[in-house]
Image (cartoon, rainbow, N blue to C red; front, side, top):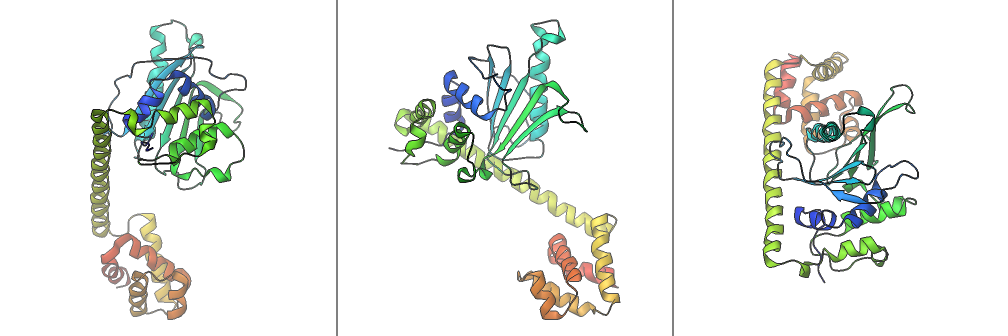
Length: 326
């Protein structure tokens, strides 16, 4: 038996957008709800029209719902990260919070909005944590907060189940999203033992989809690959333009000044420009900084600066070295 990937637009909405009891289990497991405040029942809301993010209009899959207490939940599957995604999530959740005033005239009756964003990409490079919970909190006392909006971002590629010993249901749902991919044949029995997860897995069986739905499924992946290529090309062109402008403008910014000063200081203490050029050639072959410093008997800090120069300017590194060393 073959299964489809649950992160696809078709499968995600089929599982979480059509079965509120499954979505309830999913949200109770993944959201940081107050103790004793679990979701008891859910009702789906119609998707709202929000501004599209350029080059990624088809990469976001979302499901919206409201529970019996009036709390709203926005669940989004984002297949790759862009710098504007957090702003979009903030806008989306804020708009949902404000629109409550159309049904009630008092601010005190406004209910919280939770935005859960499942990201199939890594974006927080400073930490290996995969679960990121944001609230509006006091800058000095995190126990003091303004209720109303809460945000959870989950970096799926960072999720490693063998490193987690608690919150079992959360782990199982994240395994469901990360371990089942297109063409998966066998499912761990541990996942099947949970009623809601087991049912969610059944809905992923390839045989449960019509030929027309499978065409839609494949077309979605084609669209994602195309948009990802567009974004990659746009980033690459922007990076190339940035390098070109940086060469033209010289060393006006701090990182460039640091590289220049480091190299100039190295030359002043007896290192010749020819040795710097030799270091660049060796670094270009992928040799570690420490090894290059040992081979050429150079200051390791200078070699580090030369590596930064190489990473910043690539093929133009030698020309830049000539410029700053005279």
